[in-house]
Image (cartoon, rainbow over all chains, first blue to last red; front, side):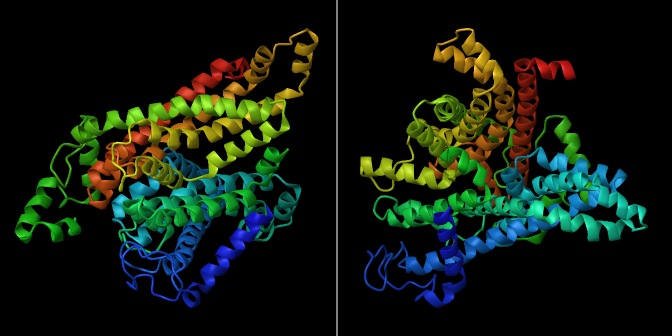
Length: 259
Length: 271
């Protein structure tokens, strides 16, 4: 737990400070191809002679940023739709149920790939696709939480006291739903991180030179044996981040294991 | 479409002709109806890139992917049962903790990272760079299978832990059931429905996993075809493959429901 918090803290700090910490541009060739780690080039250079540390640092910002944006889309769109469906009921709710059923019949990652196929590869497509791919699940959970709250006495009391539907939902239901949904936002971020790094690993960001962990992991495959650090460093960064997010968002699971 | 035009076709007349032939000049709604009509006749359309029928391309790529998914499942089920069994029933706390940790690691670690690291180890052993694409079936299957075994292990572990101290196990013990194997079976039976419904989730995971695994190991298959079609803007192929995956996913869910029902008499009575 403490380690997970420490790692995520470091990663977020690096993401914020990346432009000041990186000494070279992530796309500028500064050394010979595959130059070994040396003073001033702690991680060495990649196959095109670019400063690998600088690429990792800028990659921190891109990887976390893309995942964060995708998670925000999933939470915003999914949450809003689920909330509206549950509050409005009847036709709106049925339409919502039908839509999420269709979307849920395609595994999330494949849904994201289908969307990228429709829009064409690119960073905005990857972010939006992962966001929409994750939205149905979050939407379902939101609806369940809201429906449970609607059964509570104070909601009925607010309605009986003459509160309109909109007022009741914003003043009474929303504040009580948020604390229940907040931990799920972390889970959603973990999923989004896995989704965006997987899609960039597959090259769907449309730019093989992108300084992003998933794309770098893919690019490093070419020189797998002669320069394994080009693969190991991004792989380690991705794994540690996912493990940390999981450790913090599913503490009960880890406790179960520890027992 | 615009991308394709800028890549290969030069004259806008040719482009207009192609558009008309593919029916892309019609309104979207009409295009969709035409697509549905062809779909009903079993026609998935042709590749925008090579002109080959999509069904042919899928047929060529399918066996390799099925082999990979099948081999992964063959690894995932015993491995998951073993890890879950040890984590939920083992007598030594150290082994219990080790199995549980392994199960969470397998669940969390992305296939892209573990696959590349597996390939690296293999390449180190062989000493070649880059490692040959002929890695065989078992390394990719081991990578994908171990990742898929995580959720299985968790379900088995949770089930065993919850039934372990339940009255019916105590009763079985009191009746003199001492053999560990039979007692485990006794305890595991109530968790079978949960594990059966996990099958559907596993199917989804395996399909998404084959896409990544095939890319990592440069294996031919549906996943690689899908990625290539997306990069080439070849939408009919991507659409057909994702549609096929969704079909398999829904079918597995129905099968899993049936399995759960046959494993748990209580579910049968309710319906």
